[in-house]
Image 1: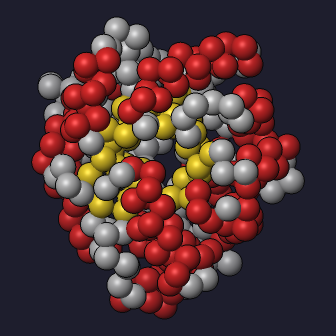
Image 2: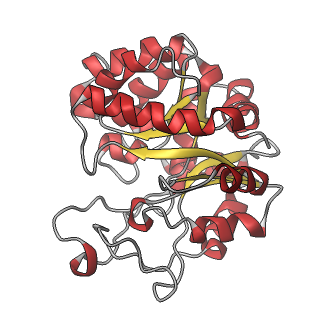
Length: 299
């Protein structure tokens, strides 16, 4: 079943709650200034904040969270420059180097940084002891700031990581419905572990990446069982993100040989229409778009 045009029009015409937040997007600057890290798997192409803001304004999204993309490694300048243009309505999640100092972290907190992203997929970590060491190392550096760790992982990894998080001193936020995939179903072991952890309040999950769950650009009905299961488990620990500009996930060549970034033709209006359907009412929609981001990102 596809999303009907009338549903999409209703989503556009129905005003979002004031201060609605897009909790997951990336900005890419001019390649001559921001070429990417030495081990990048795609070559960033410019996708500026102004382009995003035009789309967001048409949908009624007032707040944003810039998330450091993998191609930039620990060079957070592009996201931080975007953050500086709208400090009262934006926050950021970055990637930190081992050399960053406590004073640097305090300065980043003042700027509006609220978390550190850990990519457990490239390179993919399978050793639970190594994962725990990585989590502990980052958590010890950011706990006093009230930041969180944002984890990018697939469902198998989520299932392995979940038992490690119960006594971690910082919140953990999982990207893209925890890496759920339509063909695996809501009974997949990693997703069940995610639901159990979410129910305890020990983690957050982003209701983002519906197109990644379904491998569809417009029809996100295949993501509905996952989203509704997450909502049933704990609606107080969920936020929504567009994942703009919808990067194509690439692997193979890297560095200077990496292919240019490509983007999926995802309809953000349809993403919000799906969210309205999942939440089933204005009260829960406001919780996901306004109240929960207010708590997590400290707007």
